[in-house]
Image 1 (cartoon, rainbow, N blue to C red):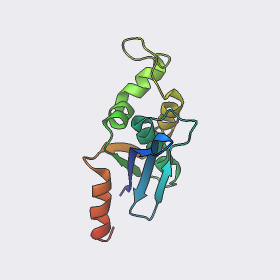
Image 2: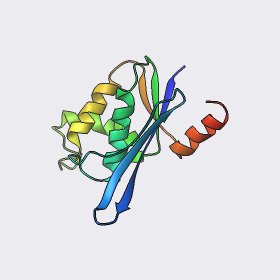
Image 3: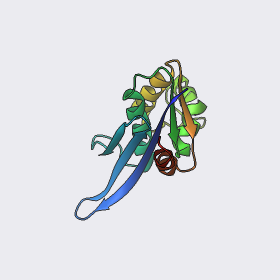
Length: 136
């Protein structure tokens, strides 16, 4: 079967700093990452979701890996749009330059490896927690 990894991104307001983005990566096999989005990245929840997905894929050597995300931004674009953007020179269907091109390029490279997929889940952290309560 697949090594299932759950990812999530979120925003937090810190007094005196403002909004900072964070992400989480969790799996049944004990993988657990919870960190702030690096400051050199565009600070949006979508970027945090995308960054989490890349970190998850980079953290496993499993031949078959399924990333579960609750981000329609990541799921829908990883399932098709991002590849079309790349072919068009990182422009969307309207000709506008898309954001996070370096991250999308990394994700495409990870997904081009055999046995790597991205799936959509309604609430990834709840799915992971239910799996932990059942014994993983």
